[in-house]
Image (cartoon, rainbow, N blue to C red; front, side, top):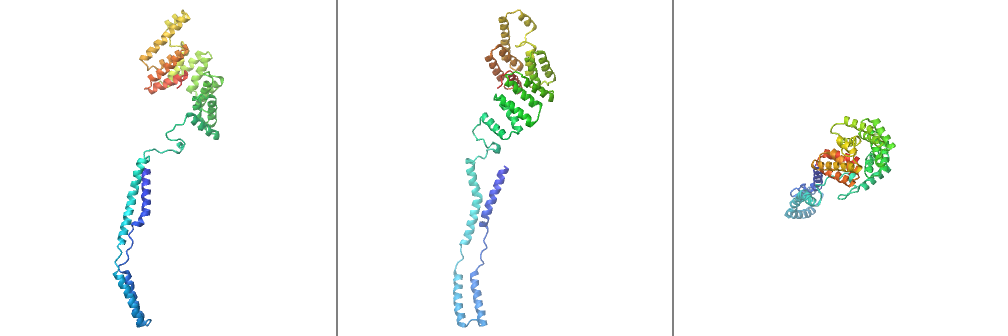
Length: 367
């Protein structure tokens, strides 16, 4: 609105500057100005005659000529064009002042874009109505970082995008550059370790574990680093150590921590069977079963859990258990289908959806 006001004032000022002289009233010549000149000339002749500058013949001849001009000037009517020219000039000024902006506005409203928001300079490389692919945007950022390798903020933005694209080696280097140019922090070390785990197919390698240890040295409450150190312990066969790490995380975490379902599912995984927890009686009975009967029993429990979740889909931890159970049993299609059903079921609850996505991401069902 301020811009419109400024433009209107500038337009009005420009029009006034050009047309104001046309609207000024020119000073009208004094009535009979030409006749007065001739009368003065007659008086001057009398003075010259009195002083002897001219004789009687010259006086008479000059009087006749001046008198003739005087009569002609007196008989000539005043020009009527003076007033009409003033009126025309003023009419033109008013028309220009009011008409030109009106015509411009009438053309701009249908042809222009009065409601189009401003277009920041940083975004002018994008053409309206088109979308640039993520690969193209990443390429632009990478080109920028080649020219400005010390841009820590750029590395910080690029690293997680490369990780999501599966370019783990590039993401690892990007995180290292982010640490170099932004400074060391627990979060950056944990992120670097997480990408190393992803690059190794989910295995917490020695290098990744070192990054998690560094993260905890900087911040003892770094959640991601603690979680993956538990995963490392689990992969090393130290289930009790993993359970202790994850239980400590749960004991110290607030009840609404978004990562609680993920850690609870991991804790359940090391504290019990690979599928939904069985009662003590069922576990005792399962010891005497053949492998085929035991697998059939486990599958039956998994199906009962799936049926329960169809009736009550708010149990995020139950969905994570179901997806994990299908994965362990080798039913990967059912695991994917369960993940899709889970997201659809809790789609209207932003908090549950976030918790579910965090858990599914760890189980390998990201996106």
